[in-house]
Image (cartoon, rainbow, N blue to C red; front, top):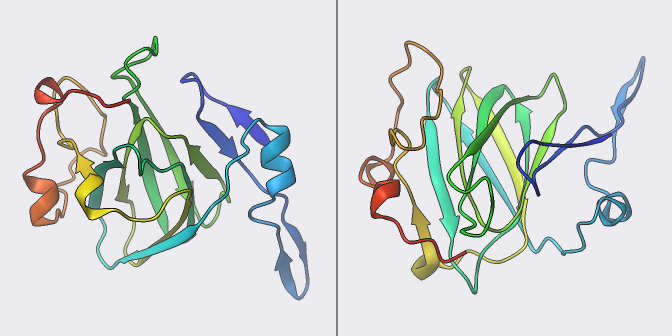
Length: 181
């Protein structure tokens, strides 16, 4: 099942899960289904992260052109609050964000197109996140924005002091950002 979101381009995908007494089987990524939903790009790299603690926050990350990436994000174990911020200057939702809980239990995925910043915070310990991307990691094009920027007004989980990398703790604000998208 594919659902559109309030922000154009974002898709919530819930693959069919066939379960029986042995376990389950699922096609977690099907190019034909994505094509029918209007997504025709090819994924070239898979990324996986494990966060041991609840409250690990990764992001808001994106790569600039010509190495910008579409992402298909899913959770293998645990759960996250996944967030995408629209950075497309011509978009009527520029600077707005969409958030959704993704978990191993709810089986949902989020397709995030080029032109968005992406972040997630783990909602439970030992959370594993897997995502496919349409371009290779390019360190010189790796950028980000502050996770707690007041102009973005992202509603992170209450009573949560996030665990951040040094890089994520020092990212620039949205007000100081000029979008390349």
